[in-house]
Each structure stands twice: as C-alpha cells, then as structure tokens.
Length: 287
Image 1 (tube, helix red, strand yellow):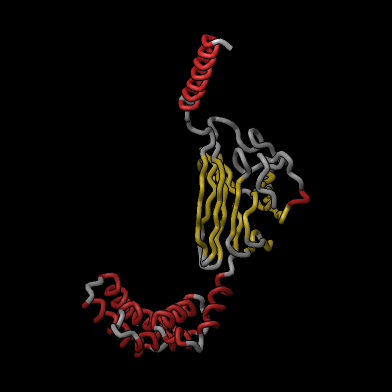
Image 2 (cartoon, helix red, strand yellow):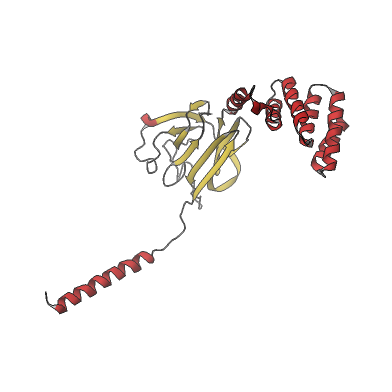
C-alpha cells in the first residue's frame, strides 16, 4: 500500500471515529411519556416499596378504553409495576412471602382482580402466565368525585399493623389491605430482652410499656415498666411521666394520675416544652 493510500485510510478512520463521538454526545434526552415513580413506606416495622411508571389520561377514556376490561394489565406503563415487602405480609387476605413481585391487575366495571406475580422481568403483560401467580384476589372499584390525571399508586390508612394500598386513575379507585407482622416482631424482641441487663435500660422499659399501652395489652404490666423507667432514668423525663399519667388514667388510678401529671407539668415547664405542658394540663382538667 503506497503512502498516499495509507494516509487517506487514516484520515477516513479518524473522521469516522469523530462522527461516532459527535453522534454519541448529540443524543437528545427528552421527558418520558410515563414518568418513573418510586414510593417507599414503612408500615409498623415492615418496609413496602412500589416502583412504577405513571401514564396520564391526556383526554382519553381510561378503563374500558385505553385499558380494556377483562384483560391482564401491567398496572402502569412500560415494565409492570413492582411491589416489595421486607417481611411476610397478608395482602387482600392472602399470605405473601417477603420479596419483590410484579403487580398485575385485571380491570372490570364492577370487580377487579389483583395479581401478585413471581416474574418481575416481563415487558408489560407480554409472556404473562397464570401459572406464575403467587396470589390473586378480587376487589371492588369505587368511583372518585374528581378525575386523577396521572396514575397514582400509594398507601394510606397507616397503622402499626396494616395499611391500605390504593390505585387512583381517571375517576376510579381500587384499594386493598396489607397486614404486617408488627406485633409478632415487637413481642419477639421483648421476650428476648426480658431478664437480660438490656431490659434494665429505662429507654427499653419505656418502649416496652408504651407498646403494651398503645396495643391494648396488659396495662398493669405496661404501667410497671413505665414506672420503673421513670425511676431508673437519671434525669427525670416529662414524656415518661406523661405516659405514666395516661396509663394511670386508663386504669382508673386517679390519685396516681394526678401526681404523675403534676410531675409532667413541673418537668415540662422547666424544659420550656409547651406541648407537654398542655398535655399535663389536659390530663389534670379531665380528672
């Protein structure tokens, strides 16, 4: 190969590489038609995560139109919606192990089917096989008083032991319950700690007593633990005495509740804490 041809080939190769570099750097980044969304929510001691794409109405009829009745739907756009649980849960009355799943649905005018599916890697509902369902259950849709433009999936009605997972789009809401094993997890911790030096810690005692109180368990035991926490804490805490007063009220021990509320007021005033001053005054006024 003579020198002129070799030089021409080198120039051509350089030009091609430059063109590829320009092409790569010139790619245009535009908004997604159905933006990515990620929701993380703690329910009790359980982490729940939802990952999905959010299509919008854009003037279209949604259910019975864009999303046909009676067909498996990815419950969003692009890849199917994914739902994760850090613990075993009860979903719509069905037991589901901890893990990550695809959330499919079959919309209907008067009834929807919710499907928890083991394969999270499909595109949309292509390749869906009912044999891979983990659980499925029926729910009744409700009509919203206003239109929701973009698909919204979330959790509300949160408690220590449960929540409601809802899907809103257009004028339709579909909701179902999720129950989490909070009580079993907390009671297991308490059982493990009882009788150990760690259970002598006033914060641990207070936490156990507060949980018993708020869960409606043995209130005498709750009071014993909270009272012990109050005594063992080097610096008296107004929030501990407030809990003690509430327990004594619930147990009908008015004289003891009065003394604990007065102690709460004294400590909260010294700490310049207006919230607990009000709590103490409210307890005293109700006695």
